[in-house]
Amino acid sequence: MTTEHANTEDLAGALYDAIALVTRRLKQTRVPGGLSLPERSALSRLARSGPASAAELARADQVTAQAMGAVVGGLETSGFVERRPDPRDGRRIIVSLTPAGEDVLRRKRDARGRQLAQVLTAEFTAAELETLRAAAPLLERLGESL
Image 1: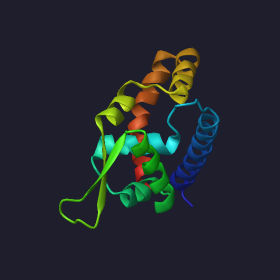
Image 2: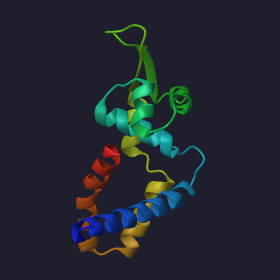
Image 3: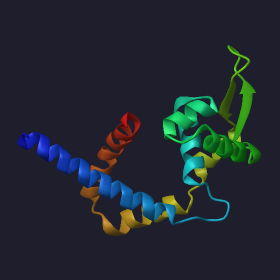
């Protein structure tokens, strides 16, 4: 095994451990009326990529179609998404963000976001914040590639 390969495996292990810790800690914070991580993920994906089927959302988040169906159902009940027949294939149902869904993403800072922002403000230097800002798109790309 080359040194470069060993270093990459060490980095992968460190990233896995760090991401798992952050995820566990964020999942522990829940506020009444706040969005769950799956809800926020689905809304964010729709905002980023546009309308999609529940199956496409499920694949993107690596969850079952049934689990995503429950998430989409809850978001629809809340008025954050709407389901319509696909204009190209009437057998498919497409989920899209409503203005209320866009609004909740734009203005609502749930407890996870506030918790993260408070820690970032209190515990990290300006240079560290810039490093994290640069790393965020890379981490998203990593997640999309898994």
